[in-house]
Image (cartoon, rainbow, N blue to C red; front, side, top):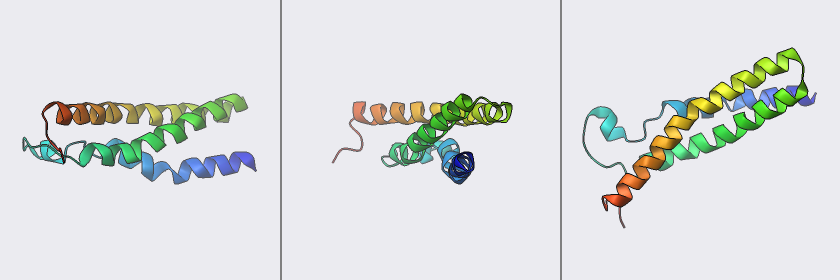
Length: 106
């Protein structure tokens, strides 16, 4: 029953992870406009950080279960968690760029 609850939590967190991977950090740059997006990085981080935590914990716990089917689930969780990391790094870079350029102040 515990495994079912864990898999249900991972299944329910799938839209969160999808948004974390797909959302652009700077909507304006995604459209080809060179303008700062003050809300973009935080909107990405709101989805990405919980997704990394949920799927990272899912990968760890499923791997510890030991059975072969759990190892496959662990690998899938690890792939999803690693897929969100570039967007987190890009969001952090965008936040630092906005601070360095003195944009989005106030």
